[in-house]
Image (tube, rainbow, N blue to C red; front, side, top):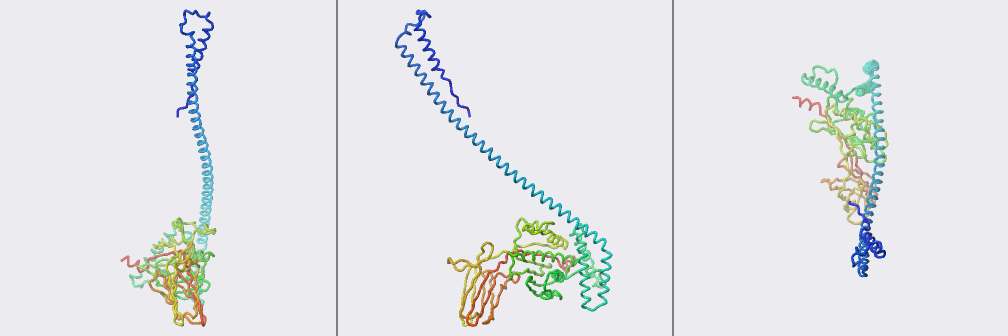
Amino acid sequence: MKPAGIYYPWLSTLGALTFVVWQFVLNHRELIPLERLPLQLPGQDNFLIAAALLIALVIFDSWRFVKASRRYRTQLGQYQEQISELFDSRRELGTRARTYSDHADKLKMFISERLLETIEYDEKFLHFKNIASEVRHNGVISYDKAQTALKQAQSSCDAETGRQYREAADGLLYLWDLLDLSTTDNITLHVANQIYDCEEHYFQAQLNDATDPSPFEPTFMMSHALRRALLPITENPDELGLNRDWPRRDAYIDDKFNIQLRSDSELLGNENHMVLLIENLINNALFYAQQKEHRNRYSRVAISLGQRAGEVELKVYNRGPRIKQDEKDKIYQLGFSSRRIREHHGKGLGLYFVNEITKGFEGSIEFDNIDNHGGRFALSVKLTNGDVHKHEFEIVIVKGRPICQFGESEEPTGRRREWSYEAPIASIEASPQASRKPQLISELRAGEDSVHLDLADSRSPRWLLEVRNKKRASKLRFTPLDVSGVEFVARFETAKSRLDNQD
């Protein structure tokens, strides 16, 4: 922008000087001969004209000065605004610089802490690995002696005592295999190499019609590995049938577990590796299921063992927090633990072992976040006097939890709903909208109270009916259950399927 100028009043100044000189000459004629002056100059009219012209010049210069002064003040105001904006911009830049500096310092502290934790974790892991390697190296003689003694004791005692010795020998072998895993540089390759050895002996045994005995058992039953994984963490093993061989199809339920056996198959490899995998999945599920905010007396750690398309399928479900999107690729990393995020000190080893062993078995491991679902729900309640009461309502999800809402009125929602009747309840027909087939609850007797869970999915029932039957009256309570949680699904190719694929 070109700066505004204020000009000096040259015209009025020169006119005033000329007028003064003219009057001075007229008043001092002796200084200049009169014959040199024009004759018109001394006249009165000329004096008035000159004075008017001088006044006009003064007015013109004054107008030009005022105009230039306004333009200057306007430009000065613009400069002041620009200076203010510049100072504001500098202050804003300074504030941003300080903010970014604080963020950079916090980021440096965070990176430093994470780096120190990683270095410390790596040092601890290497230290643990070195200790395990040293224990394995120096304990091999003691291990052989213990195994030999247990086998001799097993062969020279009765069946019950022999079973205890056999379990002790299996436990010692399990410990030895854990030391093997802890000292190997590549867990996946270590597990895979043992599977390839088992595969070779298994194929030879199939080709030779099992005439040549194998130096070791190349296969194991998946249900047996599951039983061994559950045995140390179960308060009442008999309730889950852990002290006997499981049939191929059955169900076992206690206060913590809901186990569904749909089929069983042989797998190639070291059973102890599969036991370690299942133990870590179950321990991870138990940790979250037993937290106070996720605990539910009707919800259990659900374990399902089945078979699909030549693969053994193991599912482990637990109530608990969802796995976040930004954590889905980290949960299997060595040292990562979501328990640390939630103020718990996990070691970050459980799911790492699960993933490495799964890759060694050439299987797959994935998870699903289980959500609550809303929808219409209908109940048809038949009383012993023949009356039928129908109730329809909506299950809505509020802050992630299921809530009952009745009708289209402004009636407030509630966690559960109760109905009272003037006669005992004989049967109930529950019809979720998502299910085509209604569930019938019959043979309800007067004077007996009962609890009935959703049978559509016995692993994670989504609703609960409580019946309080008296001799002449009854009450019915419906409660939608919170089933939000996580389900891990592991799949492994069966021994037979691997053999068929080789043909």
